[in-house]
Image (cartoon, rainbow, N blue to C red; front, side, top):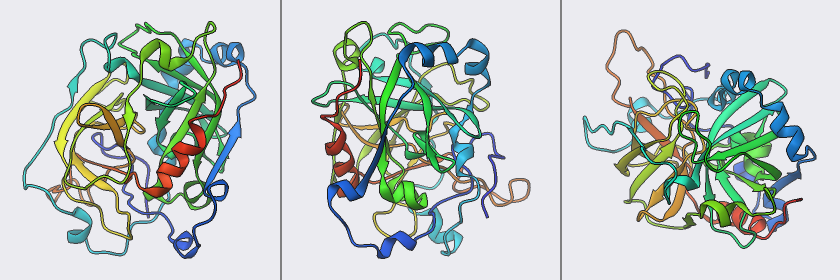
Length: 321
């Protein structure tokens, strides 16, 4: 059984794969594979909701993963591949005003259980206003989030590109129906701000699907749990370290010590394109007594056909305002 984050280095909780009942379901039409909801809260309402106190008190959304089941495979299989002892310490991004760092940002949203934070990345789209993040950063507690706000290029107390409000949220049906972590990806279509579209203001990363597995990733995010503070953008650089256990498409594993709050941050390949997002990490089974061979590892969904359908269904969506 999964528990709330108990280890300060973990993004997620001790989780890997959600219930696999959905695996037997046949693939349907695009409309059946993606669920979305128009966000009714207006820009002024959302910006007014996020007072300094609420922003400071928002919790890492990785807490929403508590209660998911561990896979049946033994620990050796769970740990996957990778070079023994390899570690990638997150490094702060010093200039978040510059492109492409400014395409990454911090996410704030509300669910029935409280206020939460995540990370996200602007991805190139025809509507020029699309943000990629984790599924648990748009849908949790059995419902889509509200008061969803994106702050690109946030650096400490500086918000050089302002606050942007979501008009529509979307996720794969397999995430919405069963919290299947293989499909823990979300998309947010943003409203205009001062008559301008997000991509025109900060630029965008490309996005790639159905790539190979042996790739090098630069993972970005706003880790909030110690030793991080949640206010600054960090980056980890790591080769793929194998995959997690469980059914295909298994999540990709990288070396990175970012903590909760980095969920949803983009994983970049070739310094240009988003090819995964931070989803979860493992808590050690016995942190006080045993070594932690899976410590400082993050997992992200494979961007295959289902995630491509999600993107294609949202890339033309118009945001209100």
